[in-house]
Every structure is written in structure tokens, then in C-alpha cells.
Length: 295
Image (cartoon, rainbow, N blue to C red; front, side, top):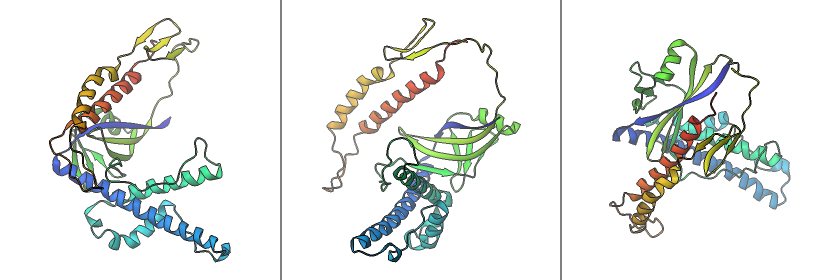
């Protein structure tokens, strides 16, 4: 049975490598914002023409927002929009265009009622300060030492841990890497591999047995057998340190672009507080993943 599975590893980037990854993430953001501005300009023009009483057959021609169309338009305009485009991998620009194509399709399907769930809003421009740096590539390999991954134009990036679990499957031919996504979360960089994995169909050891699981707050889970799984309370443990860091941040001078105020360089509490929240959420996710009923 073939299925998709993700393998996620932390990265140990040097300052030069981190600047290179941020440059690729910035390239993805530039392509996304340029294509979004182009789509919005055409939609606004057509909406304005309708208010003037122009019939539909005489409106400005619409543009396609599929990924091939956006990529073709970007290749035609990249020399003028981004003269530095050759410094980054083409996969970086494709990341931003693909994200926009997916967002526009979800918005369109949501308006037509073809998409389930909550209503999807129109895509917005990505900010350098608020957006999460992300780069997706389709060409990569894991080195023989299982501690480095090679990505286009970025070279060999060191992994914080061994990738032996994925490497063994690749060597055995039971897995194939489809794409790799580099993303910064909680002050750390991670690479996620989307793989097509061949798995044997497992039969349950005791098909007639059943157990009920009730998730809670006081206890992480309560089983129908009476067993209770304790809640490690990662957030409560980290709350004291996070409160202290929050007070330190409030006393610092923060940057404000509206009044052209430069922030203080002696305030590391903001990044430490963010890492504390990420560590607490990651600990909770790991606990839920590893906790399972016996048998």
C-alpha cells in the first residue's frame, strides 16, 4: 500500500546559510505579492468597468490564476520585477506562485459552494515581518552520512539529528521523496520531506477488542478501562519563565515603522518568549503523539 508520509528534521544552519535561505524565502514572497497585485488589478478594473455600464463582452479580458499561467507571466516579467532573480533557485519563486494559485482556487471554490468548511477569504499580501519564511523544492537528496541534505542553490545543509529512518527506506526502495520544505518556526529552521512510502497492510492483533478514549484537561486522556494518562502541563511549567520574559519585552524599545523608530538591540526577550511558547506547544504535540492505549 502506497501512502504519503512526512519526515521532519531540525536544521543547524550557519549564518551564511541562514541568510541564503531567507533570501530564497524573500524571493517566494516577492513572486507571490507581484502575482497577487496583477490579479487584483485586473479584477478591480473589471469591477470598475461594470459600474460604468460596460457590457460583459466588452470588459477587460480576465487572466488565469492557475500555476502554469502565473509561472508563464512571471518568467516574462522577472527581468524587470526582480533583476536579481538568477541569485535564487527557480523553486523559490515557484513556492510563492504555487501558494497564491492554491489560495485563489480555494477562495473561488468557497464562493461557488464547491468547498466545504468555513468561508475562505481573498488572499492577502505577505509581509516580511509577519509571514513565516518558507521555501519548497522538488529536487533534493540526503547525503551518505545521513546528517546533511542537499537543496538546489543552497547546497548541503546540516541536520540537527540523523536522518537514518528516512535514509533506510530510501536505500531499500520503499520510499521516494516528492518535495522538501524549509520553514522557520520558533526561532529554529526545519526541513520537512513529503515522501511516497510503501507500507504493508497491517491486520489488528485483536480485532474484537475496543477501548474508548476521552481527552481532557485535568488528565490528558481517560480510557474506558479506567486507566488515566497524566497531563504533563507543558504550558503551566513554561508560564513562569514566559511571564518574566514578557515583562522584559514590555520594558524594551520596540521598532515602529510608522514613526521610524529603531528597536533596541539589547532585548532578546521577544525571541526567547516566542521560543518558549513554541517549545510548550511542541512538547504537548509530542506527548499526544507518543501516548496511546496499551495493546
